[in-house]
Image (cartoon, rainbow, N blue to C red):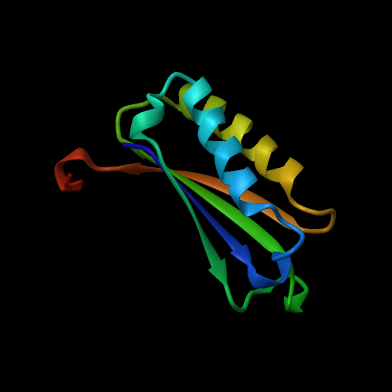
Length: 110
């Protein structure tokens, strides 16, 4: 039950094609061998962002949540592919970051 969550600054609206980005991230993860029907992909707009340049910077951050058990090389493979998609989708000068987190099976409820 992987989740891809993209948080992006409100000032990217109109510059970032969010539905296309979500579909591309979804398809990219599925191409890595994960059942497409199990992936949940969504976006959250952030009204205010304070970053390196102070208030008003442009950023997009993706989090991939995976059930625990995958090895580091597999996670790196997913991360490299997803980060490339994210960086390609955002305008120049926009921070594009990605992190991968494990979900503990015993505390993940379906």
